[in-house]
Image (cartoon, rainbow over all chains, first blue to last red; front, side, top):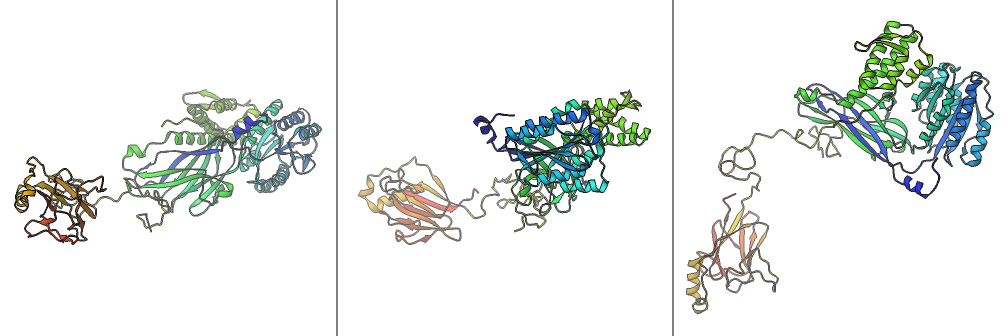
Length: 436
Length: 197
């Protein structure tokens, strides 16, 4: 990574600066109550690098034997090489239980020696045993708990289905919520996208397929780099709403769709907070939908005050940045009927993700008409929004017979990896610039 | 104190902390009551200034007074008659124009600007009348809105038109609307309610 030196340190002394921006049409027709807004949370500057913990969990079940385990060893070594000096790290080998590979217990601080020792141990990983993802996560949690104030991140690699009972697995995932973020990677085509999505979604990470084992090293390197670039360990989106208002939903809509509505934690009078996880110099978008109490034409209310706070300031009044969502009633239909372009765009992106999820589920269940109907809609939405990556992946699962009417037919010979990639990446969105 | 029209307490001055109502700005302002009639001429008002008489409806309701300073030939004749030789050398300023001072605050000093004495009276007669002292007199606002006149021990004294001799120094004399104060060689100051407002 970057060599240590005064020049680099000077760059890091700039404090992280957060900005919030609201895109919405505040005008409501008389009697209506629904307010939609897209709030963009952006951080620039960087700030001082935070204390970080990196935990790498490698599936060492029997099915990993051969090329997969060799690629996993190389990828883990690449991630270790990427670690900044001083970052705490550990490697866990997973089979029917979790075995710590390096260090012997707890975490090690990255330096020349520990990186070399860890790389050597990783080279000895053997594929043998079962798959117990819940047990692996619990082990990672035990390590993360030793560093409560750090940016805590894990990479989980697997190639197969979880062997644990569903309740055991679910409880394990839930016990890890809020303790570390976890990016999940599936190698091959025998793992289940929904299982890993359960983990990545709850632990505020990403899920993806690495179809070719040789691509694993580059992916691990990128994940490790991105995790260490984050320096705000625990950021929350906080929402104040007026008395009598109902929060319909809060969804992250970029870079990927993630429904946060049910993760609300009370944060004082008329306030709720939603966890965003660790944050670096980055930008994410959130779609809020609030029902307010109706008011007379000409009245103007704050439908929501949105701010971002650190986890230790959930109940305080100091926010890193804040923005307002406004509702104003008018009898001018030309104003109240307009839809904000960014709200419209992300509504379309969420619909696209939903159409893909439904279509693939129907395809799995053998419901061809339903699958074709929903994927047909997905093809249209992807084309309309210019989502080329998704359009290409859709093309691997369905054959587009008529672009104009959007009629599609399922490909009987569809590549399994392609369908899994479409599933895993269905929630990724593209963003649009602001027009106004 | 509840700042929100709905009666909620709000620490935030812009948006009610409870119901979110905008507390400032045009759309949230209570609808204005029907405009009143002009207090001066009775014409219906459509804005701040009366379309008929020009009265400023935002001006303070309290009557505003003014002091009009002029060179009065009649008073000059009387001064000449009283003082004879002393006043004989004085040349009456035939081309002097009236000067109007709106009265505001609680004290309006009458005198001559003097750098040496450090006096800067509001009604400065330094270049207007040679018979006025640097610290001559003062108009003092009364609690009922009117004004009192106090002579501050001036050399040539201060008198009121229609009265016999000069007023006693340092004793306030109430002025009526239209009172004429006489001082110096030819200056009269007419103190009256300003009818133009």
